[in-house]
Image (cartoon, rainbow over all chains, first blue to last red; front, side, top):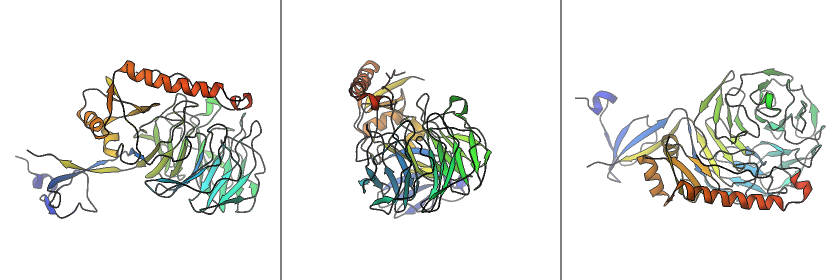
Length: 321
Length: 95
């Protein structure tokens, strides 16, 4: 007969609290709660619900920061909002409003050093840049090329703006904390794309026109080169992570919950979002990402937030009789 | 796969945890409508956890339709310049 000790190599531990470190399938007895507990790991990652946005339900917003220190700003309600919200890993709270209400813009940076650039109005879009210090937005240097539906990456003092508008453009610009200067053009002009990474190791993926919805490009600080294609071609998606550890999620058409991770060469499908959505925003890294806002169709907006963890794990209580 | 539907308000953190997401496979829709697998114990336990209310497919579709109709009416009332910058909500058909 198989035994737990025979399979795992050690006996079931009798603990006063759940362990801070455990492995998939590890079983223990918590003598404080009088319950057997088991850790279940999901190697491909999984999304769970996070705290809902507390402001207006919005799509075409932008994000920055991390899963436990996220930043959401702007968006379409419609028309456009200047709302900013800060996430602490559980709850969103109102931050300082953008100076310019906008949607279809891009973001970069952190919760206490954020960057907002571009966005509406159509058709040419905006060149307005704003910098966030954790409480207040203040004006930054204007983009050289006004645009909307663009993507961003990097940090407040080393930002990257690329693509955008309708029809698509391929222009890339680099921000130094004061002004934008031209970088290498995207190989494929596109808009409604997503971005990740840094100013010297950027990642662009998805977007419109339809023929380019699966394309990925990698930036080295001066030029873009072709990367592996997304498995689910899409636009109006969100991104997180880095050039060698990226994450793509959501998008359309049709509205999708599909999530993929990038390893610097190819995309692999992982656990889907619980609510399919498009025109959402993202933050964080590949293993701990945040998706928030967006719409379940082009205009049915949501305040829902989801947290991605890879590997994800939960501690479950075993029922014994 | 056979599905069933429930209505449950997403309160945020803890509403769906990683284990439930990975083992159940949710699809969320407007109106707090959630599609879950039929004949699935984990899904049934989740509905109990969130105090969800089971709905027939027709009832769930009616809730979604009402939400979309409201969104469409709101969109129809927008000024023309804002309509030009967005897309009218489309109908959602539940599987």
